[in-house]
Image 1 (spheres, rainbow, N blue to C red):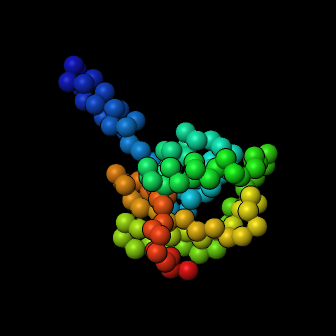
Image 2 (cartoon, rainbow, N blue to C red):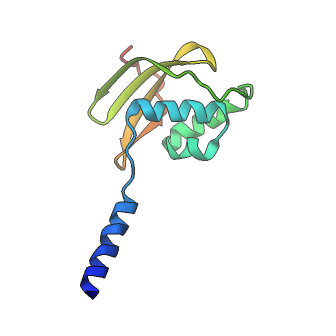
Length: 121
């Protein structure tokens, strides 16, 4: 009986520790919404260090958004191994935006695009 309880607790621990993996599109939506609503803890969780630093550096130049409905729509998306690109529109910006994502520790995270790096769209 004691072993059964121990095995049950170990199994429960592993089940609770399992992270829900978001797709590149879902991650892009979370990052876009947290950027414009200035939810920096969520923003940091879903970006690489470079991506977070780049976004924070321009976030203060963006007006506060009172809208909770981002109306996030994917225009285009492509994935090649551990790199993904998501082009999308939101109500926060009149032009489409593109995020580069990398898979880091099993999770998709938005990162900073290289200076001369061209995206697929």
